[in-house]
Image 1 (cartoon, rainbow, N blue to C red):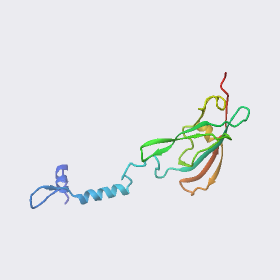
Image 2 (image 1 turned 30 degrees about the horizontal axis):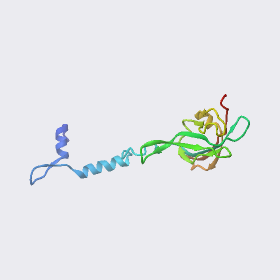
Image 3 (image 1 turned 90 degrees about the vertical axis):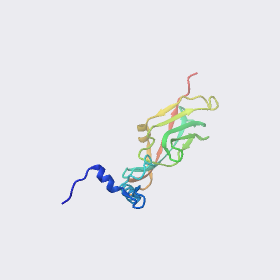
Image 4 (image 1 turned 90 degrees about the horizontal axis):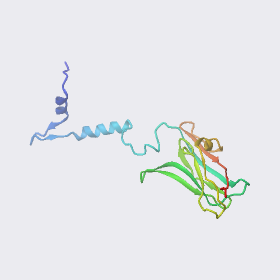
Length: 178
């Protein structure tokens, strides 16, 4: 017949005495087995938790576009910021894309893998002053970016990965009042 033991007697079963000098010895084998079981259950580490959660749908995306004035003229040197595009695990901080429009007013972000596209929207700022004309800043919400024209450029796997999408976000900036 099995007997029920209290916690202190259970602990004495987990530790045993070294017969030579009667000092307690921890069972490293049991510790290692427990770590192995926890690792198999997914409790091994909290590292990379933000980047990739098991069983979470994700996709690749990139954003391209052109920034123009109200007359349709491309604007060079506009700073385009896509806040929080991921996480730098090596240094331990969130990352953002900061781009500048070229002579044709175009910009393109690198490819990102995430659950949502431009989760915190996008910011367009004139940072060169009067060089190309002075323009008011503009902020787009996540919904405005998500509802922009987009096309799939990479097929999904039919499971959690839904493929790659390219969003075209063209923006018109108003000139600053004089």
